[in-house]
Length: 83
Image (cartoon, rainbow, N blue to C red; front, side, top):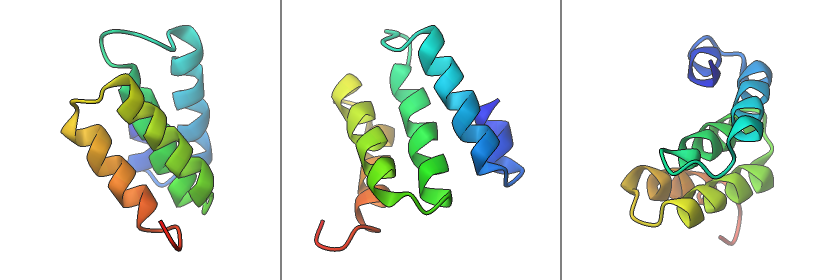
């Protein structure tokens, strides 16, 4: 649902959907980083850059080998001066 809300330009709803998914299974071996990546993107679209970085960092922590998580972190970091 979070991805669908992001695609339809509703970042607030996307953030809520990502949070609900993480609440249901915050450390899922099958892709908890996905929820954090979606949350990071929603935060970014809301202009909440520090929170976007924090969510992306958590995605990388959960899936250190994930290129997608690292790309999300890089995209979030480029929006924060000095990072």
